[in-house]
Length: 297
Image (cartoon, rainbow, N blue to C red; front, side):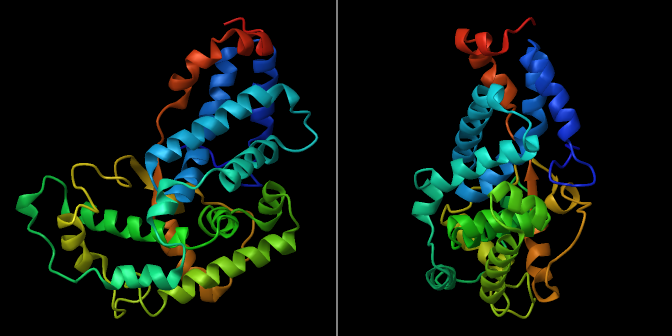
């Protein structure tokens, strides 16, 4: 399992800095290891910011290129984690509007109207599909939850991804977002409450007696093409949940009322990304990059 870079007690900074020193000393292998250590986390942040995997791949690659080309300017005045993920923050807050943001409502009330307009139905017959029905239901669940995140503005969305889903502490979150710990907590609290207020009387994940059920929406969403059994978006590289990946935070400051919301979002796929090391190797062999690192291997 990829080590969680956000855990204070198990900071990866020392290992990162060793790899940085080796990379800047001419080791391409060390630079590739550094990319590998962080690519999954950057990709999973990007995926929750933009919705569609292809766009998340593009965002991740752009971020990794910036980290690589700016690495020689890292002066160790802050943790590498802080330096690198501020690049992520700047990228996802300032990127052009994604396809997911264009196609999905950015308003909770409008989003609920869209969901209400999807009629309920019985689950499709398993014999008609190669994909397990539980996988299709989970695809509906994660698609809907990803749509909920898009109802938050970008800054709130990113704060919730970090603090609510990946469980970063207010200290780490404030460093990455370049703000105060109080401000990070306040923004996280507002984001959690918006999601909780939307879900608590509507979503069956919050309460099985609520009107909206992933199982009841699956048939119509599959038949309409919104969920494509032959081209799943969120359950293709499901290696484990965020809950199991982001375990071990140094402290908790979630409000009990909102913990159910956090847990539902943490019980979503932590996706294995494409291997960006492979796709970036051509760039690593570029003359300008080789001159920056003076590669010897």
